[in-house]
Length: 76
Image 1 (spheres, rainbow, N blue to C red):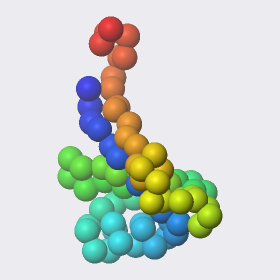
Image 2: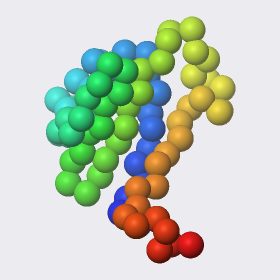
Image 3: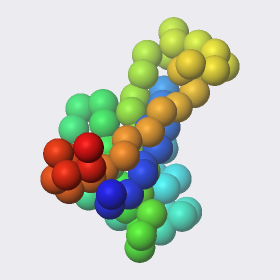
């Protein structure tokens, strides 16, 4: 296993990127239309922009995570 990275939903991707980059010192590793992967040292976060209509107070919409692995077949 390589790392666990949280998905953080937000209604303004650019505002979240600015916070993580300018305040917390993260670097953008990848950015697409509604998604960004940011990293600082051994820590990474995935930001995903959602519609302002999405209820982010609902527990199932507050976040998720990826477990990044190499050679997943070896883990079984």
